[in-house]
Structures are given as structure tokens and as C-alpha cells.
View 1: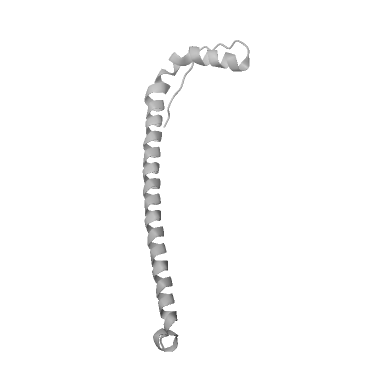
View 2: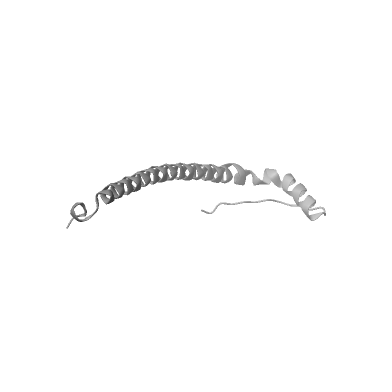
Length: 96
């Protein structure tokens, strides 16, 4: 027996309204989740490129010239420790 034959006349309209409300809620949730995932993907791609930029800057700009920053490192370390600090040589290598 189907719902149409055994149920009162008002039940079909109530079920229909609930069905359409559920479909509308699903459609809205689906659209919101797609927007959220799209923004999350964009944010992850942006974070990836920022990380790569920082990584390449460290690899090719800062580490090969680390000895040029010796005076700054001595000064900052002396301020933190509270005593004079001298550094003979600063060396950084990149082995992979």
C-alpha cells in the first residue's frame, strides 16, 4: 500500500513540504561546503607559495651570505645574554 491510499489527505502535503525543506537545506549546505572547500584550497596554495618563497630566500640569499650578518648576530646575542659575545666565524652549509 502506498502513502497516497492509506494516509489522510494532509499527510501527503506535510511530507511534501518536509521533503522540499530537506532538499533546500541540502542544496544550501552543499553550496556552502563547496565555497568553504574552494577557499581552503586557495589558502593552502597561497601558504605553499609563501613557504616556497621563504625557503628559497633562506637557501639562496641568507645562508650563502650568513657571514655578513656576524655583527648583527653578535650584537643581538650580547643584548640577550647581557655580556659581550664575540664570534670568530659564522658558517652555514646546505647538504640537501
